[in-house]
Image (spheres, rainbow, N blue to C red):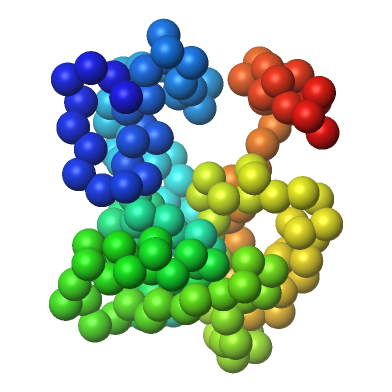
Length: 174
């Protein structure tokens, strides 16, 4: 992480990576990364995810995005295949009765009612998935969204400079 930065929760280190040591800033200027929560709120959450009653976050990890979603929902489902990360989430958001934690197998979403969710979001998760897994999740997401519901999936874009650099880096091992 950038020298002098503090990370309170596992997973939050992604927004203070030291570019000079090989870290990434999502292709964004360092000053935007310093205020990443404000950037996500202004550019992603406010325009696309207004307050709603029931939502799902896939792969919340340590809860970096979860913290921004908590005040925007009445019931927030958190689905993660890591029981350790779910345990950390429960500690981080202790006392928040409107959160539901779902331990998944990494392939299937939790059993949620058909057409029950206002939105589904996954940030910094699907970039690690192969296309078949992404396709499987998209089919499941379509099933649980309400008509007019919103699905936001943060996924890699190989036509950006940072995406192409990552593609070239991963090419040999894939």
